Image (cartoon, rainbow, N blue to C red; front, side, top):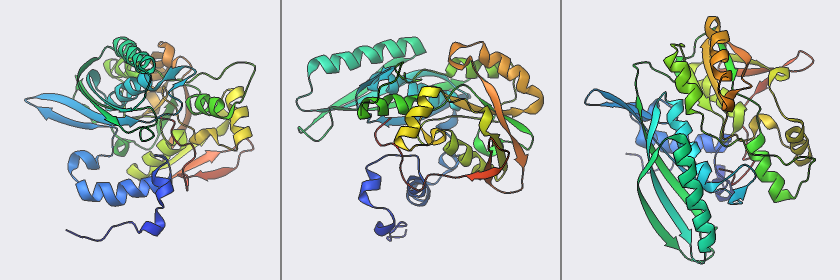
Length: 345
């Protein structure tokens, strides 16, 4: 085993480590350090969770940690975020979410009213998503060391089918479907932080998306891959698919829905909505021949009621994402070189 760190410290400053995921440097950290150290077939699949069989049953397992600031934001809070984020990761594996664990890291001095509000939110979100909190853990850290509260969850779900779903399985000619407008979660949080005021309050899209995904599967739609658009937003999810499948993806800018207030907030803060995190949106790759039926199914659910096709998988030309601009030119979409929005999920 090598004793040399695969990423020179000078290439990965401590300040970047503190900001979370979504950019090129975080991608390098995962690929060069974590994946090489822990490599195995389940991890190397590069999915939102691991899919494996136990006594003939296909299960999915995922985990995530939540460090959002502020703890409460328009449309959600750290509690609902933790439940929905984990439920959605299981759904992206094609699984029906069943059980969650809950780990709480509490800062000394956290008001009990704040903790109770988060606990109640977790309870309500779990009930709405149809999952049970079955085990957990609580730790208390010194004042000033925990930013109020951090949450960690793990989730278990069951796959009632034998399909393989994942980024490497997308095919030339696949339609790229998007479940709704983008950028609202990140901008809901940033609007609060920066004191931005608009005619109407920007609400996070935080919501469970398992039902439309499971409806697609139950309807027999040939889903090749699905991915929720969390850290790094739509752009990062597309780039990850292009690289995993070694294919060229092409999406049209005019087809990607961004609300006017979200676009305005992004312009004020110098951000690109393509890279802003979402917590209730996903993309799906399905054969072009099944795209219309898939969209009909997705639109039958409120969380994905404004689904549409935004692009296609062009073929095995290059592992790259092309964005067709409003004037018809093509530009390459890549990972961020740094981190855009710290502490939003």
